[in-house]
Image (cartoon, rainbow, N blue to C red; front, top):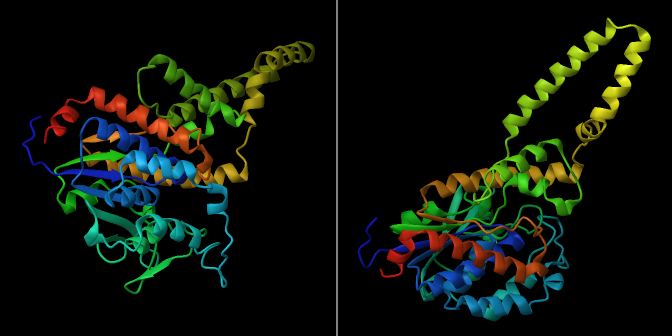
Length: 346
């Protein structure tokens, strides 16, 4: 694919709370490849990192900042709102951003920047490209129920991830001809089947089988449909055994049941494993967000997805790990992409 000099390059930085710090590592590697954006669009944490970068900071500068921040103090909901529009107004986050960016407005940024938010009243996407940068970022990170909505132009705005998790389309609308999309949301299966959680579910076995078949794949999709079929086959087998047992003498039936228990004991324990309430609620959000992100990325020219499943939503203290994951993923993708070498010359 040929690219003429002067091609407009867009960075679409997705949301993901602490996992979003991996954007910094991605930006570091893009700088190494001498790729520079003309347009940046960010959602939630992608909006935070995007705003800092569009404001003129290098990736290494942003890295230094986040590694010095006292995250535990920053994210504690000390400024609780009454009546509750959210747990916190996010004053500490605003103070931090102001200490770095001052009172910058969009017109003063180094790169064309767009901040993606959601109108909580009508559910529509609202893209902010002028006015106060701090207010826009504050709106984009307003996770419903955690941060109170921000009123801008008579609209109550919250986290943009509800409608556009990785804003590739926004980069396109603004004028980007080639877009690098950065997704920091792990596949849902990698969250639930993470060995570090100390839990295990039957479907995880099929996922691991898929990984063993092709270890060179960057991602492995959970074969939930396959597991559904396997479950049905297991049920058929179980029902057939029950029918046969009914026709066996009592003594022989007892012997067969004992042998079956020894053979299937472990599998039966796995089958009764049920996700906890917290798992169900958090996984429901992850599934919805991940599906939005995958749809958003269909129109990206390059997709970078750091492996950040070991980093929890609020684990900002794992900033160094997140940044390293971003570097690793970006370096791998750019080494494989012929387009990257062309973009670096544009």
